[in-house]
Every structure is written in structure tokens, then in C-alpha cells.
Length: 198
Image (cartoon, rainbow, N blue to C red):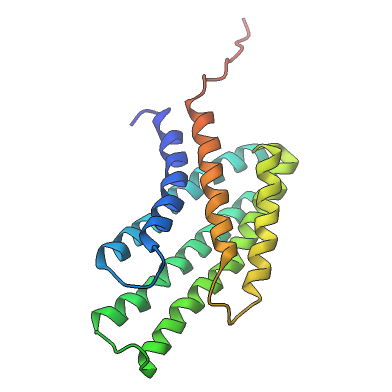
């Protein structure tokens, strides 16, 4: 695969992840196997996007910096926790558990708890990205401010441990989508000119 294609692929994953997850999840009122598979694949696609974003932040931060690595580790942790939140729903429907039974409620609450827990590392991820983007100009200023606002929303939403709805995660998906679009446009732009000394 050519070098110009790799940044485009990383940025495109940041676009497909939130759109695919949003469409696959639907309103969450009923389970369908194809939705579970599509949502899981969408979440997995966040990992290449995080790695690509890390490479940009790392290059902007320079040697000896640790904020970009914090962003990568926190982002990957949040995404993996969100991925594990699908396991209880799959188990519920694989074993055909009756809605309202104790085991059904326990597994359903486990899935919801994993989603809520994922907000903590995602808040750290967004905060680290915001700091680096503002300090090193790795992303547009408006996107850095949006990342900071998303970090605050994620941290606040994570504090409501009995929340059945996580609007901050939707905000995170929107931020990811916009970041993916910005990075894809940057990757499709003209290559920067290099001055060679003679």
C-alpha cells in the first residue's frame, strides 16, 4: 500500500467508525445479529484512527513528550471498554434470556456499566488531544476546543453512574467524525513542498 494511502485510510476509519456505530446501534430497542456484528466492526475501526491520530500528535509534540502516548492509551482503553459492552447483549440473545429476569437485568446492567466506564478514559483522551492540539497546533483550533468540551461532557456524564443514556458518547462520536473529515481533507490535499539545500 502506498504511503499517501495510509493517512487517508487512518482518517477514513475515523469517519466510518462513528457513522457505522450510530447506524448499527439504531434506537437500541431490539437486537439483531447483523447490527451487533456491524457495531462491533465499527468500534474496532476506531483503533486505526487512534493510531493515525497518535502519529500526528507525536510528530507535533516531538521527542520526550508523553501527552500523545497518554491520548493513545486512554483512547484505546475507552474503545476496548466500549467493545466489551457488546458481550453481555450477545450473551443475552444467544441464551434467549427472558426480558425482566434477574440474569437478563444483570447482564444488561453489565453492558451499560462497561459503556459508562468507557467514558472515563475517553475523557482523558479528549483532554490530552485538546491540550496538544491547542499547544502544538496539530489540529484546527475549533476542533481542539470541541475536544476540550467533549472531555468535560464525558467526565460529567461518567459521574452519573445510573444513567441509562450517555449523550456525551454521542458528542464523542460527532467529534471523531469531524476530526476524521478534517484529517481526510488534509491527507487528500497537496503534498507539502520540501526545500532542499544545494
